[in-house]
Image (cartoon, rainbow, N blue to C red; front, side, top):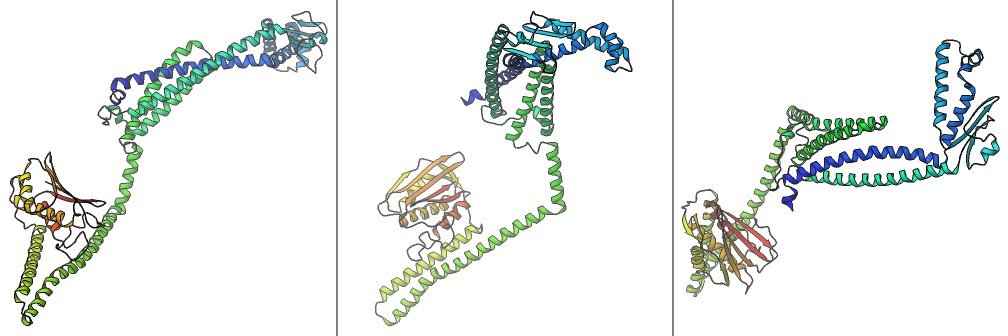
Length: 524
């Protein structure tokens, strides 16, 4: 489905259909306005026809005042009208008005009228009195003028009502079609905006048209809207049906151009260049850079960031220094105290062999601690000698496991990598020793390996027999134990050595915890 919606053919067809829908929408809008105008006229005729009757009555009143063309040219009319200058032009205007009213009266159908002043009478029926016109359900008489009556009968009302119902039905259909067209047009526009610039691979592709500045783009969109509204207004005002087809075609072309501009803006928005690709945005960015340069804001921010980093590192170094002194003091003090005490007992007691063995064991522990501390320092200072060669990981792990006892579940395929076999043997030995020492009794110890594109990743997992309230990177520091205790077999250097050796071989060692699951990932 994703491939279909983002295919260029689908998007092209959606664009063409959207333009066609817009042209149809414009065409139906013009027709609906014409229907609405006609409906308004029918509405007046159906429910009041007051405007039509009143207009006719006032025309009859003007006709009685004008009487005839001869009367208009008479001195009596000129004197009563007050014409003092441009008499000829005024007379011609009045005669023209008289003729227009007469022509309008000839066009009146379905409405009866009677107007009389003295011997002058204008009528289109045999009804001559107010009583006769009052018998009609719809009639009108000028209150200030006795002798002008208008009315229409039920047949005229029925015709107007039938026409009103037809136009009303057409209007309802037109509005429904307009709303449906507008809905489909909006849905297609939203779809085009959503998929604009996206190909089947979900990559954002800009077009050559997108080189246009976005603020120029917005300006052109507003210009298209103004021209569109202007065209629509001209056609509606002129009511010239011959212009409809030309206006609809031109509106479709303007919409296509405007939609292209909108889709270009949507691609800039997705590419996060909507502001930076504008002329105004470019000026603002330059002003900001200029202001930052003048007031040395970048220098100040950089200095502040460096000071904060230095301060954090200093605090961390002081904390680690204090912990190191405490841990080293304790780890060195314990075997030394035992050596001193048992050496003193040798002078006073007869159990020389037993005490001598304790002294020997503590001395070995002190020697081991010193050697490991030396190895960590050497690795972290970069003085560790690394000799890489082709190593079989499965064979190396198998040899290391032979020196340990536990419920191991091993899933290591045959993988060959370039690394220092001796150093990595030390890494695996430390990690397996930790698993054996600190795993919950009776649980399995898992070792997995997976071939990667540029190497391999080895995972060691076990269920811890203590609460792990530490972060993964904390236990790789020197003299830090995951258990938090100072007593026991460990000295807090195993993971630090493993991490140093791994990094010396060009790999990484990451420790993760999840509840009581302790996991070490070695990536080479």
